[in-house]
Length: 439
Figure 1: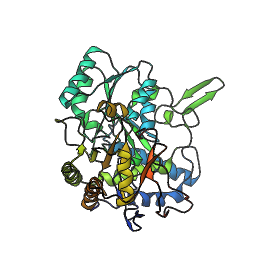
Figure 2: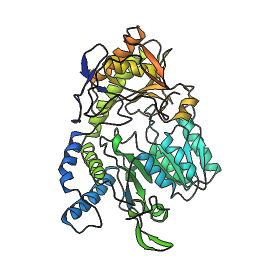
Figure 3: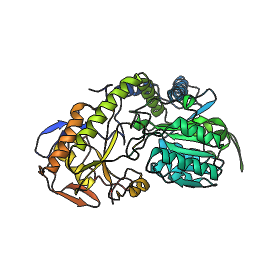
Figure 4: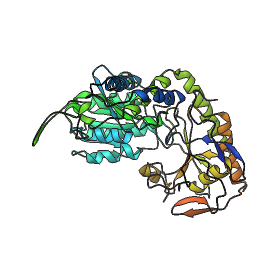
């Protein structure tokens, strides 16, 4: 049973045997569908859309108010302190790149991170140090502590929850450790914030980044929320209109944050959508969300673990309760083929590949990738059981299709399924991608 209404929750997809079934979306860790409340809010505000901040017209004033109130709502959702600033961005990757241009010193990260929290730090002039995760969570924190004691760092950037295994780091403990060594802490909230309530004020973390498309608001907006001082003086992220206070030939006076980093016309509708998602998700009781997710995750892990040849990944035996991300391998069957089979013959959407976390997958010995199923507010017991049954059928050889590898993507040699997507669509896409593919 879905905790909240979602757009497209009853979408029917064709199967290889000629029947149709309700799509089971177990790929929400990549991108989540829109909350119905978000879609309704977008429909409500669209007639009032106009330029912001620089328009005297009535609709411009309405849109400006909508944009700034959305900013405040997003900040409140992550427990922003009174003097924190919320910068509207495109997504988590955009937010991390923005902060990378403002950090006044060296950055420390773990190798378990998503590429979005690894690659941008290479831009930092002072450099980045990458620490290898250890076999236990306690050992990993000790490794961070040792590096902090040996060097001088301006920022420690950590994931709130792994996008590979769902395991969460103890943010409060790491904040205390980093602050004791004079470093600030950024939390990558991409996989955390749809599953757990989080507060900058309560944890003491200095920054958090988030994406609307992970938070059931896929309208192209994200945010960076945190301490103002670095952002007020850092290099403007998007040089252009709106980011400036005064421009002369050869000289520019820049605005402070957030305007300093929001050059050009902002995504007002995306901000409103993200704010609506924050309001709706913030209204869920944390205990209700935890029960829903823990029950389904536990059921999925138990079901997969009973299947011979299936291995569920875990980074640390002593980690905190994971969020709803379950990654597994099937002996002797490539991850892409598993995913293609589950889609074509069971109507299941899962993710395969290396999940934009290639250093971690390589360290785990999974150079060919793995399969990831992710649980969200719309996931049901039936979805979980269908996945377990699908993997069981695959292992038993109950396979109707002929699956082949084409340009790095596993697909049906011949796909008789009709194309039933939105009007104007002429073909289904290949599934391989440079970030997540196993090739």
